[in-house]
Length: 107
Image (cartoon, rainbow, N blue to C red; front, side, top):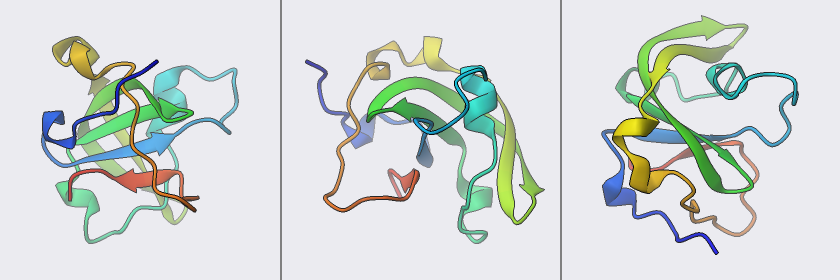
């Protein structure tokens, strides 16, 4: 059983993206980096993106740059999962009725 994530353990302002429906032939980074509907007012403040599958953290990326992408947002970044090993495989708490694949975790 996976433990629930403690939001205070996250580095900086972070969003999670659910990559469940993404093409399985893509790498985790490619599936995570594009193309998400994110509040344009918040995007500049998001420094980390957590990829998750079925609510379980798979990877953590430090965002180097946000790029507008067909009315959505994509990012360039690097994995920092090795710096936060206690967060990998943690369960992200889910609210009932939640459907958006992007979740603002510590705003």
